[in-house]
Amino acid sequence: MSRSQLHPVTEALNQVEAVLKSVADVNPAFMQPRELATALVAMASVEARTAELRLRMLACADEVAADAGARTAGDWLALRTRQRCSDGRADHRLAQALDRDWLATATALREGRVNVAQARVIVRALEELPDDVPAELVIEAEAELLRLAEEFDPTSLARLGRRILEVVAPDVADQHEAKRLADLERSARERQRLRLRSCGDGTTRISGLLPDDVAARLATCLDAFANPRRDYLTTDQSNQGGNQGNPFVRPGWPHGRDDDRRQRADTKRMPYPRRAAEALAAFLEAVDPARLPLHGGDATTMVVTIDLQTLISDLGTATLGVTAPGDSLDRITADEARRLACNAQIVPAVLGADGEVLDLGRSRRLFSRAQRRALLLQHPTCQAEGCSIPGAWSEAHHWRPWSQGGPTDLANAVLLCSIHHHRAHDPSFATDRLSDGQIRLTRRRR
Image (cartoon, rainbow, N blue to C red; front, side, top):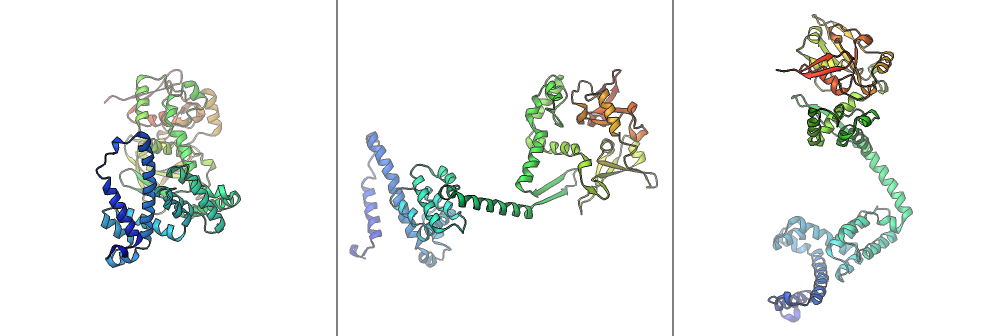
């Protein structure tokens, strides 16, 4: 093919290549700073212009791709130029969009007024506009984004692009935003799922999909229990409600003993996912069963089945009833069953030697509201030695275990916070009642 028969684009490319060869061995280090600065900016404009030409050519290269057996022109070009296929496809999509829909943006790229990254952002913002936005508003939005591209980089331009409808048509934007949010909320309600699956190793895997507002409320509740900043509240702040229900705050921090300070440091290093898991356990135990809906004729409860001999002894296991349909029953230790039996939302089913139900209920096992009020008058805080957790946040505990015939009366009642209540039921801790009514818990020596 003679030079006179070459396409103007091919001729231009030949001239560009020749010009670039002429400066291939020139060292720009000897350029004056002002001239170098001007040349760098001009080079960016040239790159934008050549990129636009390449995209314009790519938009009409489908026949080239078909001849080579490639899926798209972008795939073919990526293969021939040793680029990532994903980049080639992205360029092909941008080329088609500029050629088909966004001529003003293509013109700005051709004139070097925007770069390729800005063009991608503008096209994405325009294509994300609702389908029912009038065409004149879309044209106005494109013009405004091109104007903003003269001042902002692609990242800032992307943020502005997400709100461009509010700039060109605030009233329309409000209507579309309300409709979009309503659609999202309806879709979230339809797609929400929650599943609990026992792993068989003492843990249960929780998976699900929650609406944002539900997840936000759950996160807020867990943060209230798991916030590590609560570890540094003073005793006085604890009495004012700063540490309500926090499962990680040891009594008296930061004025506790050395082991308290060590545990505080361990808690600070504890990964947040573990703190959140422990916070969920504390949150569930803090839920007031009286405020829960009826379930099977009573406030929502969980049944722990254990035989009488195991309940009285120090060893053994119990069966934990799982209410989720299709889930199997899990096993827990007798010590944990005895601790759970102190809480109103847990119903122990105590079985005799022949499997008959000896006790199923709470009336004689749990302390009444009047008894709790009387306990609070006698003990305004947790009765564990040195603990300052308010008694209103503590749990009523049978000093002589209910499983061993301990009566549910004030003489046998002790107020313990959640941490000390766990330790009172932990066989590795010894409990002693001091003359002033406080409870001393010490780890047993092996």
